[in-house]
Length: 302
Image (cartoon, rainbow, N blue to C red):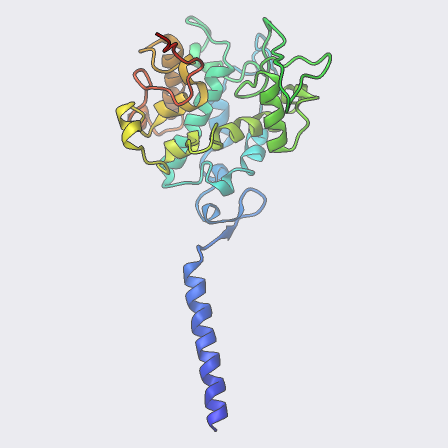
């Protein structure tokens, strides 16, 4: 009898331990091909709240006869690429407004960097995102001596993709990360829209250096500024995403036109998605931010 009691006690303890372990493990969800095996997949996925017609509204002029990438960019390619990053939180973090804000923010960068809009363009200057998929008149081949990612003979590393990629070392690192031979074939980013969106999402989700945040993290609130960040006016919000993606090409120079153009695309997309620019969030600009990664160092020699 005592033996049976001991067995029952062991079983009860085992069940209790299993129940406690199950409580400590975060719940993960599977929602088919678009999102599976992650706590983020328990939320709405991008295709639940961002539909084909909204994509068409945001990029209404991309297939106009005068555009330079007619027939290349489409909603399906965007969603296919997003399915790789939604389980990591892209467009699936926070409440519905936060999720929609992130999609608008990401596409705001994409739209501004691939736009051929101008002041009096039909539909307005902000309607021409995804007009390009590559740099039209490269000023150089963007080859830099690099031990890890040496230039391939006859290959040019000019800007391609949704967030244009330049230089051999960037193509090499990106290719390793998304498992595509971009060092030998950078043209893949102007031949495959899903891959082009994927490359841009990888950049959005990945810190440029260790101990630095990603654009995703600073936008959705996963990152907390240090005292030094606060003194450098680096605070969570859309403005810091520009700091991370472009550094001193855009930030720390006051309210320059290139920065204002990116912000305008973001807010225009918020309006078209039904969120409204009133929900742009705090710290929208980076006019006075000290950049994370200066492109040059001041000469301190005396």
